[in-house]
Amino acid sequence: MLNALNIQFDLIVSSSLKRSLQTATMIGTETGYEAPIQQSDALAPSATVKDFQKLLRELSNRENVLMVGHNPNISVFLGSLLVPASSPEAKIRLRKGSIARVVLTRGPATLQALLDPRTVRALYATSTKSSRRKISRK
Image (cartoon, rainbow, N blue to C red; front, side, top):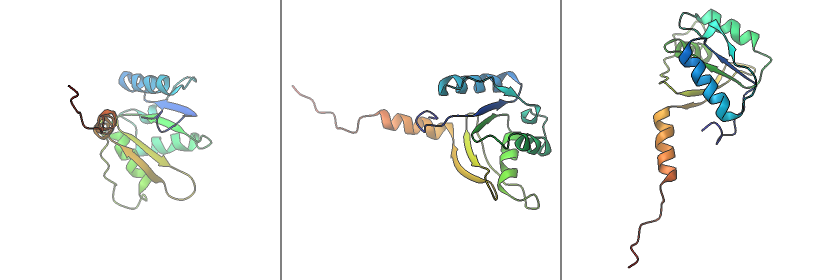
């Protein structure tokens, strides 16, 4: 899906836990990412929003960063980007394998896309089926 959208990454950052590293490596391989995957405790299950915000500041000079983490943290981190700190927490559901694209340029963050793996599979299945009716030729 990322290749179909022509998305390339300047950097891939992952939690150091095995499953996240496997996912980050697989995505890196499939998208042609050749640099080492950076590991960060700011994406670990025990990380806080402050840890995540510090990581974002450290990566502010990067344009396209893929972050691979764990629920419920990654959902909370995403929500913290989309609403002011004084507001109630944004409720965002990220299933395993979901991809959220967020733009963090000037002003508040903007959620540009949220792809659920079930939706991606359904779209793929629909696009690979022929739209032509089957006609028997005897």
